[in-house]
Each structure stands twice: as C-alpha cells, then as structure tokens.
Length: 478
Ligand code: NAD
View (tube, rainbow, N blue to C red):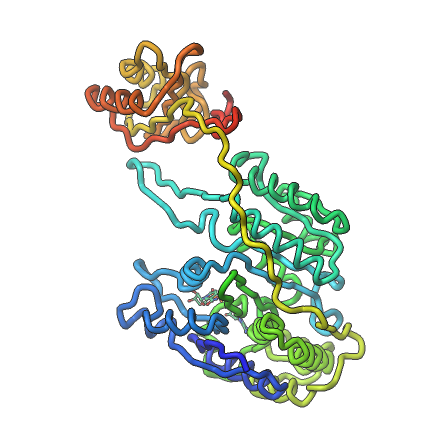
C-alpha cells in the first residue's frame, strides 16, 4: 500500500480525478489517498501560492502527489502553484510522452511516438525579473551544470529503460552561447557515456519545425525549461488532443503526476471532460511506485476503449468514433475493459518500468576563476553613443579603460552604426590594460567615480575567466 496525496483541483479537475481514481482502484492499485485542497478557493482565501502550509506537510510526508488541474485566478499577485511545487520539491524532470493513436484518434501524424523530457526548475522560470530603466525590463536566464547534468542523464536513462533508440537535444546555442551552450555541452558529455543510444542536437527553431512536420524523426527529446514547456504542448496537440497527455514531474525525493491540460472551466460540471490526460499521469505514477502490473492493465484497457471507438467529445469524430460518452461513462468503459488488450494498437508491457534511480550530482573541482573586467549598466536618456562614451570615459583609471558600449547587446561604441536603435539601457564594458589587472577594490573605485560623475548605474556584472576561458559573451558585432 502506498500513501499518496491527491488534489482534485478546479474546473473539470474533480470529475476527471474521480474517474481516474475509480479506474485505477478497480484495476487493483494499492494506494491510500490523503486529499488536500489546492487552487482557486485557496488563492481566493488569501493564500497567494494556492496552497496552505499544512498541505505542504502532507505532500512532503507522502512524497507522491497526484494533482488535477487548477485555475489560477486572473490578475496580479497569484503565483503559479505548478511552478512553485516543482521548484520547492526539486522536481527537476518533466516527462511527457506524446503518442499517436492512429487510426482511432484523428491525427495528421499517424506514426508519432515522442517523449519530451523537459528541464523543470531553472532557465527563465527562475522568474527573476527587474525593471531597470524607463524602457527596459529584464528576466534572468539561469542554467546550471547540476540542472543540465540531471536532466540530460535522466533523458538517457529513460531512453535506456524504455528501449528507445535516440535522444535529441534542442537548444539555441548559436545565440545563447553561455546558457544554452552549457546545456549542449553537457548533452555531448553525457551522450558519450551511452554509445548504444543515438544522439543528435538541433537548433530549436528548425528542430521544432521538423518536430511539428515530421515527428516520426524523433524519439526522446531533451530541452531546457521554456522550450520544453512550449513544445510539449505542440507535441501533445499534434497527436490529436492535449486532453490525452499526462506528465510526470520527478525529483530525487518527491514526484508529482498530472494531466498536461488546464482546468477547462467552461466544460466543468457537465460530465463532458476527457479524463485520459490525468489517467496517463496516474499510470506513470503507478509505474513510479512499482505497481507496474496495475499500470499495464489500466493502459491496455484504456487503449482498448479508444480502439472500441468509445470517445469523449474532444476526440469524437463521425466515421472513426462509435459512441460519444461523458467522463463517467468513459471510466465505466475502461473498467469493463480491464484485463483486455487492444487488437490493432500495440499493447504495452511495463515489466521494467519502475522509478529510475540516478546517481546524485557530484560537484566538480572548482576552476581557476579570475576577474578580468566589469560591465557597468547605465540608465541614460541620450541617443548618441559617442556622447555617452565621453561621459563614461571620465570614470576610467590609469589602467582600467572603457572598451565597448552595447545597447540591447549590440555594440554601439566604438564604431557603431547610426542606424542602430538605442534604448535608455546601456552596457559599458571596462577592461584593464594588457599588462594590468583588475580587482574588486578597483570596481568599487569605478562605481564611486561613476556616482561622482552623476552616472546612473543600475547594475554591474563581473567578467570572469574560468581556467583561462572567457565566461561572458562578446558584444554582438564586436
Ligand atoms: P485548458 O487546458 O484548461 O483548456 C483549453 C481547452 O482545451 C478547453 O476549453 C477545452 O476545450 C479543451 N480541454 C482541455 N482539457 C480537456 C479535457 N480533459 N477534456 C476535454 N477538453 C479539454 O487551458 P486554458 O483554458 O488556457 O486554462 C484554463 C485554466 O487552467 C486557467 O486558469 C489556467 O491557469 C489553468 N491551467 C492549469 C494547469 C494545471 O493546473 N496544470 C495547466 C494549464 C492551465
């Protein structure tokens, strides 16, 4: 018996959760349910996270969380419970299988069988944002070596366990050489440990286009958080419906399982919604807790039900489907099929589908880190970079000089183009002369001089080299 935390959520949540639990219990799932309240009511009661602190205790104690979709109220101040849960509980891996059920569910891609493994904790979802000037706001994109190693290793271990042949990585490292560059580099390092699995890297834009056009080219795809968020919805939708896909959020201690879709409030309370997405999440949960036989039984019964043409409204199609059913009737049909296998669709076998146990991340020895310069960001309302350079040069020292000014990343001084559009947000790069060095006392000196000269400094970034390799990007056009 495994104790799990269940949240029925909002909108269609309670209906699809009841149907899901009814099916898995009828299949023999050995689970004890502890229910918590999350979502709209909790938000509106004044808890900006959508969850009460006692509920965190329940989730952390039970470690396994089956969650229905929730409604995040419109308007500012409400934090996404999904993002908070993933990060608080260290659920670093988001796994979304997206498989076509041709010819029973209408799709343009009959042979698609992709699993998206999305990094789940970092990237732009760190949510660290600041307004810096009248015209410019920023969001920090944080990518870490542990984050990359954990997710890439998860993708390869998953591929190995599931007998999949290829792992593809999507990044945009032609532009983001440090952040996406690290993700790609770690992918190459870890891929070399799995010579039996094919590996490849695509730049995300053409990779995404290919995936939407010829998904049969792909198997497992691993990617940073934001790309994975967008592309896993695309992948699920092109199998036929977002209502069919589930997702697992896996951490070292805790895990959360859910449907990929939201609470579809317009469909709520009408016995219309398709419970399949949440059921798929529950099947991943059963595998994760070692109840693989039950998981297999439910999945085969579900495939048989879809094959029988018993469909909810979202996938019902004249000609392909046979009976249009509601949520409850769909659950009853799946239960009646427990013990049966599909005939045309491939029946599943989950013999070794248990939770993956990965080695803990080991911190590497520190590199030799040297301060080699500083970027001072400045709020300035002028338009002529030469004028700004003249002003900023007044804060130079004997040995530390202004070497470049950029605006939104593009070099505008020295030798900028008049055509380049400039905002009020400027980056001024200072470097020591060739035979000199820079230290933190020098930086304090530069900032003091900037203050004395009425330069509005809004932030600084230290420029480091790590084992002699520059740890910062050049200006575009530099
Ligand atoms: P949604 O996924 O809830 O619904 C979009 C449309 O997809 C619906 O109108 C419906 O036609 C269809 N649909 C979705 N699930 C279905 C199902 N199981 N059966 C049949 N049809 C289904 O997206 P939305 O309308 O953008 O968001 C509604 C609410 O859900 C928002 O408050 C949003 O914040 C929240 N949301 C929650 C989660 C989550 O809890 N994991 C995820 C996404 C959105």
